[in-house]
Image (cartoon, rainbow, N blue to C red):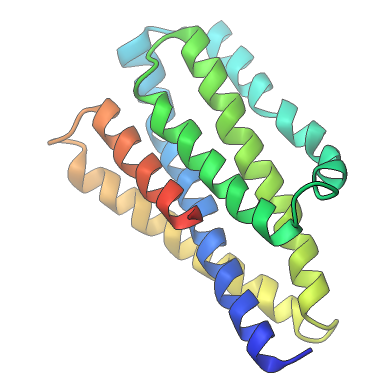
Amino acid sequence: MSEYKKELMYSYLIVLTICSTAGLQCWRTLFDNFSVNVIGLDGHHIGALQSVREIPGFLALLVTYVILIIKEHKLSALSIIILGVGLFFTGLLPSFSGLIFTTIVMSFGFHYYETTNQSLTLQYFDKLSSPIVFSAQRSYAAAANVVVGILIFLIAPYLSYKIMYILFGGLIGLGGI
């Protein structure tokens, strides 16, 4: 395989990994305060939501059927767009049922990306370079977590949860595009 294709796939996976991690970090950082302070949920609701969030993880094996219809690298980008859409609409649907819906959407995007990311990395990079690519992805993901945390800390006094979800969801969706 040409080095050019490897470099393109490397950059592609890094950008999508940053988007995936940033989206999940944003959701986790804002979720607790949003669900309690804005929606008024209690521990029972939070437990139910966290359980629902894992359903797409169990269904990630269905990605093998989806790639029969959509090319795997396109499914990776589509998954990030779905993650961004779920994040975007979280702020627009401030209710328990709205949060269940957006959590499932966001989680499908996250879990399907993680599945295709690993597959693409192993397809495009040999057994000596794929661990290096995985570690680079994790490094960028960690940096994205820190940056998102700092950004939320800085903008939270000025923006509502709704605006922050819309802002971050829109950015994640654009990253997928």
